[in-house]
Structures are given as C-alpha cells and as structure tokens.
Image (cartoon, rainbow, N blue to C red):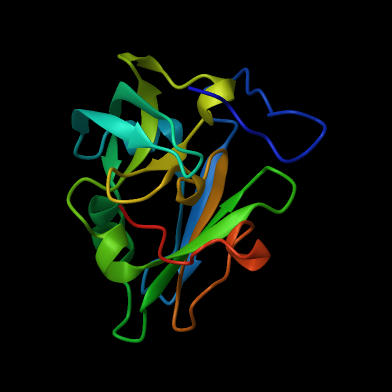
Amino acid sequence: MPSYFVSRAGPPVWTERDEWALAVGGLVRKPMRLTRTMLETLPRLTYTVKHHCVEGWTSVATWTGVPVGAVAALVEPTADARYLRFDSFDSGYYNGWDLASAMHPQTMLAYAFNDRPLAPDHGAPLRLYSPVKLGYKLTKYLTAMTFTRDRPGGYWEDQGYPWFGGI
C-alpha cells in the first residue's frame, strides 16, 4: 500500500507514547485532548478489510483503533453539529466528513495496522480509517477532530475530488 505525505518534510516521529494528543472540540459540551494511552483505554475495534484508493488499487489489511462514535460519546456533540473536520500534521492537510459517515460503526481512529502499532508511513500516531470511504478521505497524522455546523472542505476536495468520497 503506497504512503503519501503532502509536506516535503515527511511524517513526524514521536519517541514518547504520550507527547502527542488529539484535540477534540468544536460544537461539543466537553472538549478534550486525548493521548494515545487514553485512546487505547476506550472501546477497541479491529477488522480486516479491503482498502480502496481513488487511483484504482486495493489492499487488504487489519486495522485496530477506537470507534469515532466512542470519542463522540465522551465529548457530547451539540445538536448543531452536522460535520466533522479532521486535521493533520501534514502541511495543512485536512478533510471533512458528514456526521452519519463518521458515526458508522466501522469508522475508527486507528492506532494499529496489521496487529502492530501504526508506523509513520501509515499515519502514526493516529489516523482516520473506515471501509466506507476512499483513501483520500482517511486523514493520517491526526491532530484534531472538530465538530462543526458547516461542511468543511478538504485538501483533495478543494482541488476537485468528490467531497463525499464514499465507496
């Protein structure tokens, strides 16, 4: 499976397990910063699935992480929340999802790939993963997850790729 990084600097590498944290906020009652250790204490989801890239290739892999819905339950989105924006360390890379797709039971914040901790080339320390979306919607190197009223664009979507990006 190819690995893409928009920035010329390459993916960041963390040496300490909890020096990184995911900021979860926006239209929520309880904004939070979740470390990798905190995420690993939440309900775990593991599945093996065929990944689909917009370029036409596929790959079968096993993903493990926390369901996005479990994180949403912690932060308690307000009734005005309709979308989620996912931000990355990667040179301003981000994209938006509709709340229904993000709450799909197989949509996760993945921290493991093929039964090993997620490596930098696959988006460590955390990436978005779901079998209901094409690869360009699966943001790597997550820094923030923001609940919004307005539909966010996205790195590829702002360049003409379909916003929904579903399979």
